[in-house]
Image (cartoon, rainbow, N blue to C red; front, side, top):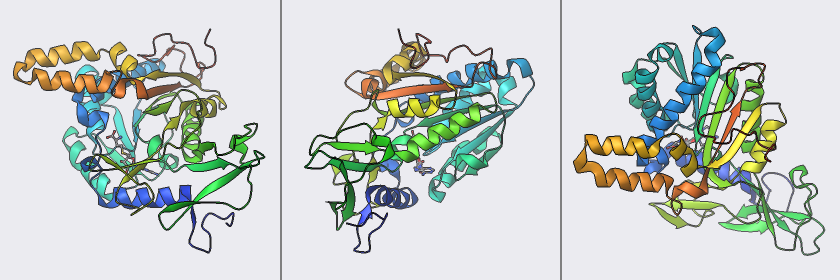
Length: 359
Ligand code: SAH
C-alpha cells in the first residue's frame, strides 16, 4: 500500500476518506434526520451556554467595557445553539448583545442557509467562514458542540512485530493496511501491542491549537463540548449513524454521519503548548448542573406544566450518567491572565484548577 494520501490503486487514507464522506454528507443530507445533538434535544443546553458566554464575555471586556465582542461558533448545524445563546444574551446582557458580531465556521452551503434562517430575526451581523483564519482579530468567545468529533481521523494498527504501526486506508468499502511500517510523531513513545488500534485527529488538535493561538493574541474564551475520553485510549471509535442506527462507516460514503471520539488529553496538550489557560475536561452532566440545568428545567416545567414530562426527559438525556451526561465532556480555554486578568476561571468548571495542575 502506498504511503500517499490516496493510492493509485484506489485506496484512500482514512482521514481523506472521512473528510470526503462528511463534506458530501453535510452538503446533501439533513444531518438531524440521522442523529440528534444536545441543542436539538432541549433549549436548556443553548441557554446555559449563552449564560456561559455572557459571563466570560463580560469578564473579557471588563477593562474595555464599551468594546465589541466576537461571538464565534464552529460547526453550528442548524443554528439552534446560536439562536438559544443569542436569546439569552439579549435578555441577560443587552448591552453586550448590542455590541456582538456573530462568526460561524461552517463549510456546508446547505447548512449555512439553514443557519441564516434561524438567526435573521436577532438583527445581529452574522458572517460565515470556511476556517478560523478569516475571523477578524479581537476579543472573542467561541463555542463548538460536536464539531471536533466530525473532523477526519487517522487510524493505526500495531504491527505483528510490535515494532511500529501500519495505517488504515479504505478501498471498496473495507479497511486495508499500509505495507510499510510508519511512525507518526503523534504516536512517538507509544509502543503498540500487535493489533492495537490508535487514532489521531490532527485536524482537531490543529483547530484547538489555532483557537488557543488567537487567545494568546487577544482576550478570549473557548468552550468545546464533544463526546470522547479524558485521557488517550486505544481502540476503533469511528462510527456512522443513519436514521439513528449504526451502519458501516466505510460503505456508501456521504450517506451517513461519520464521527470519532475526541481525545481531550491531546486537545488539552495542544492548547497548553500555546500558553492559554486550559480547564477540564469536565463531564457534560457536571457542567450543565453547575450552570443551573436543574433549576432551569424546573422553571420551564412551572411555566408549561403540560410539557413537564417532555422537559424532564430531555434534561435526563442531557445530564443523565447513562445518557450524554458522562460520555460527553467539555474543555474550556481562557486567554493567559495578562490578557484577561478579570477572568479567573470559566463558569461551570467547579474546581477552577487549570488542566495539568490537579492536586
Ligand atoms: N453544533 C451543531 C452541529 C453538529 S454537526 C449541533 O450541536 O447541533 C457538525 C457541524 O460541523 C455541521 O454544521 C457541519 O457542517 C460542520 N462541519 C463539519 N466538518 C466541518 C469542517 N471541516 N469545517 C467547517 N464545518 C464543518
